Image (cartoon, rainbow, N blue to C red; front, side, top):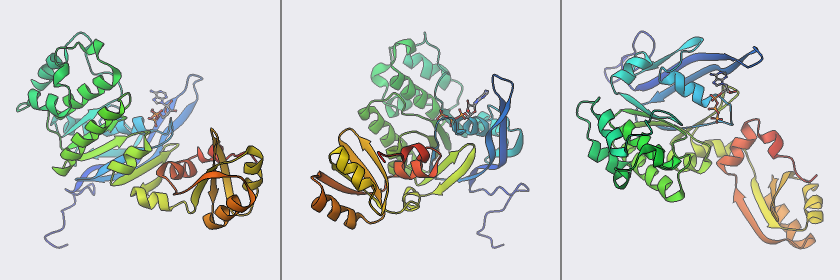
Length: 319
Ligand SMILES: Nc1ncnc2c1ncn2[C@@H]1O[C@H](COP(=O)(O)OP(=O)(O)OP(=O)(O)O)[C@@H](O)[C@H]1O
């Protein structure tokens, strides 16, 4: 080992690792008393400075994984370390903070009182600055119960910034925010990541993952199904999508032609997933009355649908 290489701790965690999950399993019992596995042998290593998007269909195990990462629940087997120690220790030390989907706020306090009260728990916290960074200064006198869902998310974000954490974990942070609030939110996070903060965020908004993450982790049924940059995951599904305004009977004929793998209708527009977009374009132009034809590379959302179980239903077309 050279001097420049980080020295591994006895558990194989290096100083560049923010979080390490080894073969983590979490089981729950459903209402009928049957046991099922929500997180199924998950391995994950998050390195300093990464912005990791955490994607998966409903019930895939994202929140359960985040809860284990934050020490809110313990795995049935496997282990989790944050900054080389137990998650709760890292949370107590203020090294990690989270914006979770619900809870954590007292409805009768004002926004400012919430930030000041929780700020008093962290030496060096600067309530004014975090309110500014989270865009809630103008809401300072509003009671939490009177804030909208998106405003409450911004307040949770402000609270998470109070400890000046090295690692920020966000569970669907922009749920309920309007377009402008989401844009402002990500601008703030981007600024923080430029100063070296590590961020992991779970989201159902694929464009957020595409735009803001340098790594995308997809899980399904508690297992990792894809891990890499958004572009590398998009590249896993070849071909292009050709779409057009076209009569339903023409769409059915086109969907049955060679090289068309799937066809989905959204309103009047039909989307054809195909291996040869040139051949399909010729067919649409010469044999149908299709208009407003568009050719697009595959999106992260399409990759997500194809890679996760949701692909099965999404690929059903008019055939
Ligand atoms: N405390 C619990 N008791 C029983 N089942 C649970 C519990 N918490 C989660 N589950 C179940 O575990 C599975 C994974 O849930 P989890 O909340 O981690 O999924 P998720 O990926 O965050 O989903 P979503 O995108 O809908 O928020 C789901 O089937 C959920 O119903």
